[in-house]
Image (cartoon, rainbow, N blue to C red; front, side):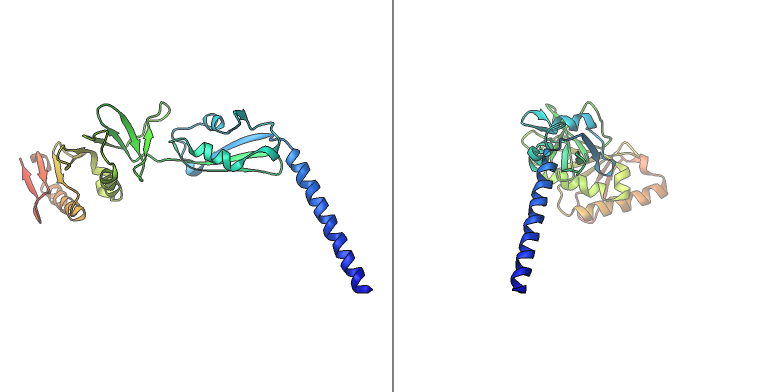
Amino acid sequence: MKKLFTYLFFLVLLGGLSFLYAFSSHRNGEKKVQKVLVEFEEGSNYFFSQKMVDKLLILNQQEVQNQPKSIINLQGLEHHVVSSPYIEKAIVFLSIDGVLKAIVKQRTPVARVSTGSESYYIDKQGLKIPLSANYSARVLLVTGVLGTDNLTKITQLVNKVLSDDFLKKEVVGIYKTPKGEFVLSVRSGKQKVELGTLEHLNTKLKKLKAFYNKAYVDKTIEKYKVINLKYHNQVVCTK
């Protein structure tokens, strides 16, 4: 009898807790969204303002503010926000007090590509980012690219340049020749650096850095018009 009483007690307690939970969830779901807050991750507020993100936070063509929390599709809102080519990642959630918060990470441009007929940024994954009237990024300029070109090799070269402290400061432009080779424009002189293809890229860049170290010491850097890195274990210069 005692066991039966204990069993019934816990059954009633479980039922009561389930009722309270369902009641609380229902009341919480009926609460309306009071405010929408947008936070840019790592201060990456390049292209978007809060008002612009607000326009992406819509549900069935209606603003989410003043909508019941129960009908808010958070996953759908996240997908809608990241559908923008400027947005890399978004997390959208609701607080108990009815605040809908979006934490947004924008794509970081690493180079600007000009094809002659169009111009756009790329990020470190090689994904295209449209130009924006709100922000102009000071990044490497890549020219000679055709509209049908694959951006994989270009992205590889850009990322390699940006990963090196010296090259990041020195290289200001990349030109892709019709033969698929690459020429670098540098900051410290008017000379062009003929890189050739991306085969043995690390070795070529090491040769370039070694040459610059010597040329700076000798103060001869301004004498050269072309620095050719195509040849194995050589740096061929034209005055």
